[in-house]
Image (cartoon, rainbow, N blue to C red; front, side, top):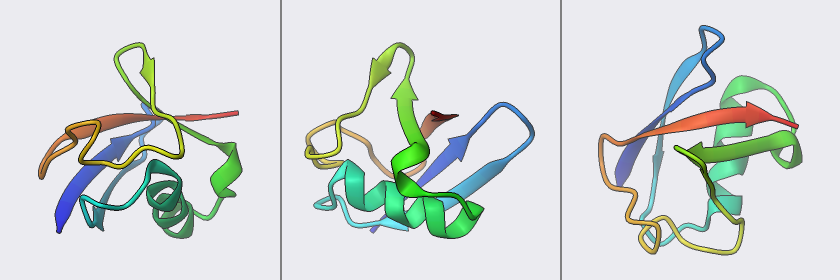
Length: 73
């Protein structure tokens, strides 16, 4: 299990635990359950790179303790 911190820069920071084999789409569902919004409205980025839903956390090299930026569509 890895714990990744999501920051929306509007004052909301959450930590989500997931498996490295989970896809970004699965991870968005976990984030959506914690913040109370729909998973399809969430966009996850690191710098200017937007993460695609069908690729795993491990493929993007998202490890324990990393931060990602959380945006809304």
